[in-house]
Image (cartoon, rainbow, N blue to C red; front, side, top):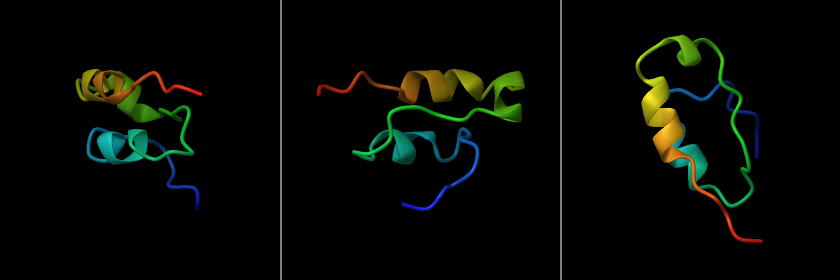
Length: 47
């Protein structure tokens, strides 16, 4: 998988669904209301 860059409100759900993604790099989105969407898209994955 190529590096998609920082996660944002538009791509967080798609990235969280990927089997090889276990975290996010959150840049400027952490300062915007869309940060709530990023947090909600995160799930705890079973090993």
